[in-house]
Length: 303
Image (cartoon, rainbow, N blue to C red; front, side, top):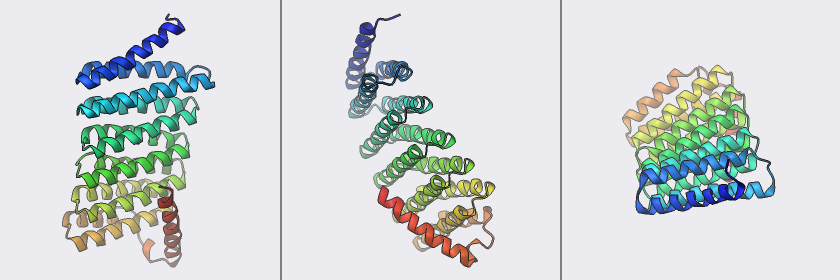
């Protein structure tokens, strides 16, 4: 077994190797270094959570982020995606060990990297980070860590908007899908705020996609809302179903105005597929929609 000093030296060597390989465009060497750093982080997560331990883990995850940024400079998207995956693994491990501050820190790095990758037009890299955000968000829903669920949703929204603006075909669509899945996972746990947040964010993304005249992104949002509506209906969250129906109808009208015929048809079909009979005609639900819109404004202020 390595002594403490030998272990620390091995960590430093792995960081140096990761940075060097990333700058040199060595994919295999970069990924191997990142995987080693994940193993070191896992070891530290299972140790006593004192101040020194916390600093050591944060230094490791920051280093993984630095390696990812170096890989982005050389357009090595697979290494960037691997970094997002590893940081997602560390986030999940920290959460499973009830180390929420560490999970928040690591998830924030994943989200920041996703945005940076999207800004640079690295769609594959951004999609990899989005997958980590989405998988983490679903796990947080299942264990009812609502702060982390909201953080996951917030980053997914930002990445989706950035991807639309940059015309990236994959990462924004993936983000919309994961938002629907996180909402569905929250519905299963009866976490109404997180479920409603997902629905409200998806409506905003749908509106943005229509403004960008992006039919693929619009259809992805519609599909996510439809899947979320099915889950919400199954778990009896009627008020949120009202929001989803309202969102789909809003998107349907906007797509009709913009001439996005395929998306318009998809929105209409989605409305018909979820159990919305009479929902939009009841006076009490119109009042509920007004309440939801107020909640909508609060969510946007938080973002």
